[in-house]
Image 1 (cartoon, rainbow, N blue to C red):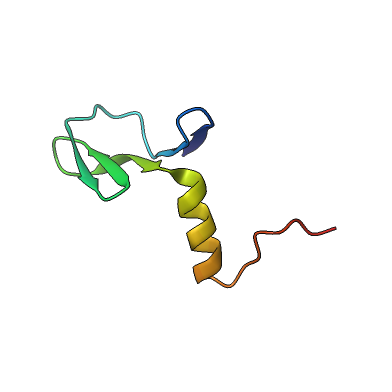
Image 2: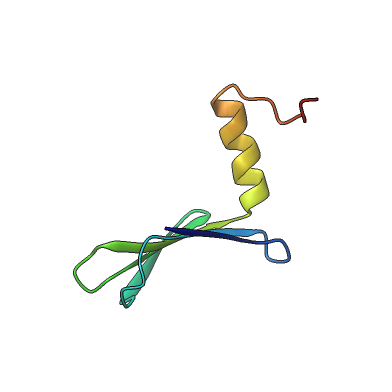
Length: 67
């Protein structure tokens, strides 16, 4: 698994495998890329900073730095 973040585009990408991608589906601010057999290969989270803040709030974690 490979994780990459583009600060300029504010996109977080989780690459599961290097198999060829056949198609993609967009669900709100998430794009999932699939192989021909329907296996998810790449997950793109658009507006990643907003997504991560919402996730941290939902899980009860603080967004403030701890010293």
